[in-house]
Amino acid sequence: MRIAVNTRLLLPGRLEGIGWFAHETLSRIVTAHPEHQFIFLFDRPWNAQFIYAPNVVPVAAGPPTRHPILYRIWFDAVVPGLLRKHKADLFLSPDGYLSLRTSVPQVPVMHDLNFEHHPDDLPPAYRRFYRKFFPRFARKAARIVTVSGFSKQDIMDRYGVPAEKIDVVHNGVGTVFGQDTDEEKVAARRKLTNGQPYVICVGSLPPRKNIAQLLPAFD
Image 1: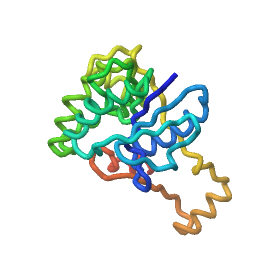
Image 2: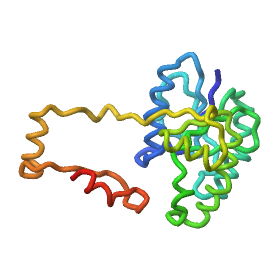
Image 3: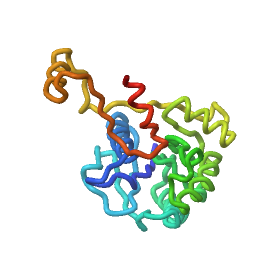
């Protein structure tokens, strides 16, 4: 099978949430499935660190997608031609964006619908784009992947997608993380907090992240 993949968020030194998700999952998928060819579609020159295996074919085609207008140009004017050129059997999109102008089966990963619940967290152009096009992407998709039962139910309720079209694939933990021994935990507390229990939160601070409930939950 020839699987085209939206890899526009694989940016060297600039990986963020979904970029990290794409990096961690794709690096494992392509090595686990040497029987398939993966066409990585970048919107700018690619970096060799993201070409994980010999069965990956990198393709760069602009324009760089820095604005909702450029999203539509890339996904609806550029991507369909690339899918035809490389005879793709499937288009996988880790950030959920799809092309509305191709007949190639597409599978988006829709992590959540936070833009539906907290639209004021986004600039107006992005808010309009997400709320206009993500329902269309959900209808266009051959299947949808999401990361939790909550998000699956949300997609079903908001967009009328049947349950059997949505697969839940939970997020995992990177290999850099591990379980400390009891002795290591005690040593860390002694070093960092004079022996007191502590919690570390790594992330952004908008209200939708619910940081206000972190301390009561920890307590």
